[in-house]
Image 1 (cartoon, rainbow, N blue to C red):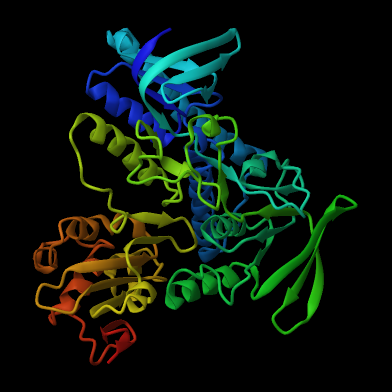
Image 2 (image 1 turned 90 degrees about the horizontal axis):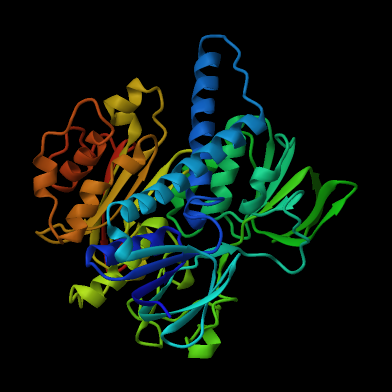
Length: 490
């Protein structure tokens, strides 16, 4: 029986990151992946959807540019776009595989093995691997579970991944559907609504059970997104409860009932179900070793440690934030605790996130709604894109920056939201301030490149310090300051 210091089950972002960090410590490591190296972080998930979004974003920009100068733009066919998405998936997965092969070639094979197969935990130290050529049992001092997640199915909807699909079935469309309904107005649902509306070939319907889309975000963020969605031809069903959805004559019929007790039946070509994800745990054999699950079916963990001390769970298997960067952080952190004497708990309050929408939305820390709910004393500055020279030059001034700081002399950042072009490139410096619990003075006084979108960040900070170029007292529609005390604005 082969013996390892660390066995990592799952070759997605979190598992790959954990295995590579363990290699840094010259530990004997085995990484087991049953299907596609890269997992949902590459295939049908983050990389795939963002590649599709980038294509749709470019196409929308080119269409708008052509229309501005009285020209017509022809959108590529759907198969060509999906082919490009698949090329991106394979490029990343092959790159990851090539990296593992080079590790072996450079003499790391004595410390690292990569195995393709299904893994099942037999006890706290033994793992059974089922491969195409048979079975093998290995011994590991420590086991890291990183098998990821998959889209959640609803029992009353017959999802066939052809007509009614999850995000895993988007690639199965032969052509742009003439119409598409999306169930779920969270991040993934809204992202696909943005993509298909950007292409301009599909009439998109978006179902939200709440009174607005992205209900977990501040109202001004939901409002600007909703405004752009409607402008792009998306029909948004608010306060809607899905009563039935089924395929009739090759089309999707669905019935919605609304808060006013009215009901209506709609018909579209395709449907996308986007109602969350579930962990891939069924074949891991967790019941054999007593790894506990929570009520939602995710693995219970304390700082990545499960109820079995030498077994760790990272990435989408736990109920923490299901993002690639968070999964990688957790995978590396588990190894750091094992071999680098790291005892600090992971922080999730300064995680930077991006929502690939129309417009793009980036965030770190708390939003206003969350800060109010916590009863915090804070100040918030908001600067609209129409005051930023780069946005004006881009002819796209839809968006704003919003930064929340403590209502004291230190003015430490507690959260930021960026909405608009280049939003994701604008939050990292502020996230760094949060990580080090620093005030805003240094960043406010830095010379930012001109013209650039991040000058809006600087103007936000200047406004909080009372020295912005545009004065909120006379330009309140474009730049504003609010103060909140104990959950109420004053």
